[in-house]
Amino acid sequence: MRLLRRGMASLLSLLLLLNLTGCWNYTEVDDMAIVAGVAIDKNEADGKLLLTVELVDTNGGMDKTQAGFKMISLSGDTMFEIVRNIISITGKKLFWSHAKSIILSREVAREGLIKAIDWYSRDTETRSDVFIFVSGEKTAREVLNLNSTTETIMSFELAQMMRDEKFISTAPAVEIWDFIDKLETKGNNATAPMISIHEENNKQNERVTGTAIFKKDRMVGSLNGDESKSMLFVKNKIKGGVLDMDDKQGNPAYSLEIISNQTKVKPRIVDGRLQMQIHTVTKTGLDEVMTPQGFGEGESIQDIEQRAGERLQTDILAVIHKLQREYDADVFGFGEMVFEEQPKVWAKVKDHWLDTFADLDVTVSSKVIIQSSAKTSRAIRPGD
View 1 (tube, rainbow, N blue to C red):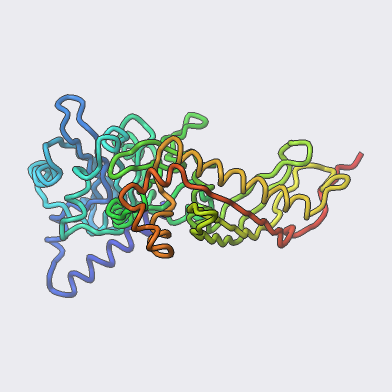
View 2: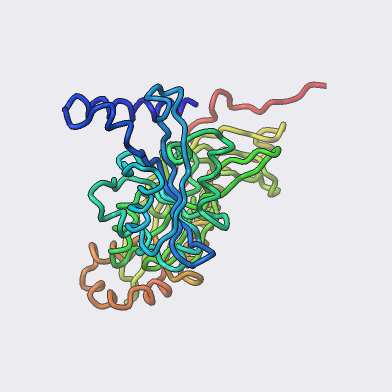
């Protein structure tokens, strides 16, 4: 409810501002169909695009405690055709300035997203800072329809989740302008966060974790949450999150909270071959020790730091190799870095960059620093 109240408060402020300028009055506001977000699927019946629109329901007036939502679905050959034809259902023109989220089905993503997002990026009434998602469920509409069980405006909630994603780092936060920019850039493939339905104790909620991988505008595969975190390390997009560490025997023992991270990537020519050299320095806090023995015999902060660095290095190399061998997609922007720092080399490889990327030599060096052990340096020791 707090998120709903916040969203409705900002919406009311905008509408009041429009009223003060003389461009709108209350009657005109009441006649608008305010779009919160959309889901885009492929209609099973006819193979056309199926658009589901989440609308802010202001029938109760602009009292923020009375605002709800409406869901409308319609299919058509093009997005623009669907958007215009929805007017015949709502009796109102769609107002896009408060749209926050676009969810696309995997089927649409695999066939190519340009047909689904070109109109949105081109229309003068839409905003470029809307978050984009790929559904991990069969359709995008069933994720958006979760608002019927959570009783919230789902698109507003998703936008807030992506603003808070930096505390988890298991998926990229991608706005549509950034997604399109990657589609149009040589040497940098696009990504989008995956969203699915999480069910526990018979209660369903949305969950954002994992990454959809694109070549041109087609989804070619995905990464899970842990792999996505490793990808974000390479891209220097880590702002927070947790590194789970085992003890020397391989048992789960420590949780390191990421305080800050700095990643440097440099293209170099080594023995006549192009090589990407990656260095990460991650500052953490030791926030959890899961053993009553504490660090254990012979276990020190330095030991944990070393194992954490080795583990991170291994995970980063693993996700890079997966992108090279399975998907042949440079989501790290290595090509852009070569263009900027080794322009002569780029001139030779730009026309077949993805082939070069698939065979690219990559080295990783990771250092993890434990700055603190939170409020105490000792473990909890149970008594008799």
